[in-house]
Amino acid sequence: MQLTTLRRASALVAATSVAMLGLSACSTGSDSADDAAAPKANSTADAAAFPVTIETSFGDVTIEEEPERVVTLGVDGDNVAALGVAPIAIEKMSWGGNAEGRTDWFDEALAKIDGAEEPELLDVTDGIPTSDIIALEPDVVLGTNSGLTEADVDTLTEAGIDVVAYPGVQWATTWHQSLDMVGKALGRSDQAAELEADLNETFEATTAEYPQLEGASFLWASFYPTDLSKVGLYTAVDNRPAILAELGMVNPPVVEDAAEDTFYFDVSAEQASSLEADVLVAYGTSTEEVDQMLASPLLQQIPPIANDNYVITLEPNDTLGLGFPSVLGIPAAFETFVPELAAAIDGTPQVY
Image 1 (cartoon, rainbow, N blue to C red):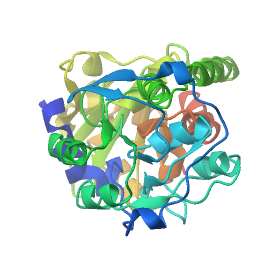
Image 2: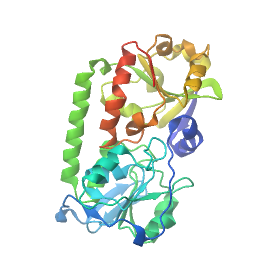
Image 3: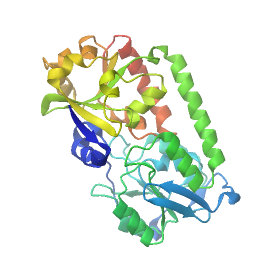
Image 4: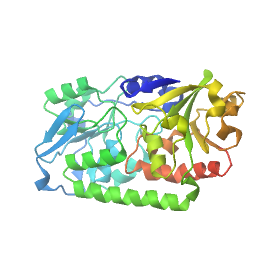
């Protein structure tokens, strides 16, 4: 069994996103602050909330007053818009996003903000575009669940910009943590707490509607089209399994036994028959690829595949809200993905 530790998370993401993970995004950059949308907000910050200090992996960040020009990375644009604030720039979502390089749920939230203009889209294909961000003259950059590096943070900080990065490692911040941090940064902690309570109710309603989720064990897997000799499995450190766990599902022993600092690991296909679970979830990029995987004599021995308890999605948008979790994206994923998951648990395999 080959383990991939959190220190290697960003490298793994870069290597596998095209095939299965979809953990990258690309976009067009911005020219200057003059081109940025004027800051708008439909909610009011608590003036007494400032100054506020937020802990991140790169040190404490103190925001002295309410930021007006907000740039977001990862999916913090969702959290910002949900709190009634229009960001001037966001990271483009090319994997799973809509034709505009955003998401439908972000666009819907932005449309509710009076006078909000479309944000600039930031190109992260070759890393965080710090020069583009500096040119926008933001008051704060929010990247609580993003690909920010220490060098990025240093560059932006030296330019006089407050940067709220993640509290742990890249791409491993829970939706609870991100929402809380963004709420603090914008002086809207009370509103963030209300949104969290509302989403917790959505979790409860979803488990009530689909009782078969409770206690069901699952494998969230990744298959390699050019190498079917191994199977990749995500652990609860990754947001996708973590959210399924919040729905009452459980990790099987093979995942529970993985190292605590591992978000993803490979298992030889020779061990396929030992990968016991009630259901298997995986991505596919085409029906041909899925047919190839399901035709593999070794992979056919994975119990949930053998028992027709699997869901393989060809639509990255359907699970985007789980891989990139936000207060807006999670409910969207519940609407599209959870019914398919429940059907698979009940013995009707889903490839869609």
